[in-house]
Image (cartoon, rainbow, N blue to C red; front, side, top):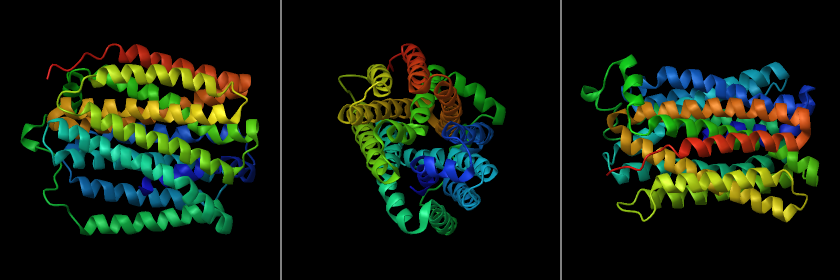
Length: 375
């Protein structure tokens, strides 16, 4: 999905972007968190509206905003990159939940709806896997600015297609069953397990997205891997995330799985805790690559469990639930990038490991409070 490409370009070329903007890597990497702040505001504000507006129209608007952000990012100066991160984050906050809710709408309220929504996230991770080499190879000809221009063109074309093509049965939700705008937020609080699930989502995103914000810089500093070689590392991480998300999403949304999504959620976070602490202390490239893959797969499994549980438990409020979830992940992205940059500035990669490990541990505590479904 084109929605993932702007931040893929930003992460893959973080070092040269920071250099051209006259900024440090820690300062430039922390800007990605601003996208999370914008997405938090937009995602929460539009959450109830997502169940009332046609999903494809919401997605088209998000694509236009994404194109604008990419065009601004082409300027490359620090102020432009601030605007780029803000607008790209706002665009993602409406695109992802709109597409996930649209997929779930076609399958009612059962396990199939959860599988459909997690399949959307699996597809996103597949695109992320392919995105790094897709942006790195053309960049050898036209640079990272050319990548952003291409993203803008593709996003605008897709927005035009969505505006002209309405899927059969497209809708904004079962409006007759929906509470009012403010009442929607109160209703979400009473969805079983919603509060700890959203807490897990925020903390998981903070740990994982914060880690990804500095992954290129880490591999460059520790193993001297430039942008071209790092594209393969990004692909490894994306592949692991795709496989983990797809397999866990399919398994946990079976009718009667042997291990429930609540159990897999907790185990996945424990694995992620060990991996995120270990990677920043290793000096062996093969071990670092192994931990990168393990971290991607474990976080993917956790994300699949959260999405599947929210979709199945929220009923007609699934659009609102997914939007608030996306906003929460955006908040986590902001916090993770900012705290990770602080840890990196104060204590190097040991400080970053402490920050991301602490965030993951808090997610483990929240996951332990998610009660198993009674269905």
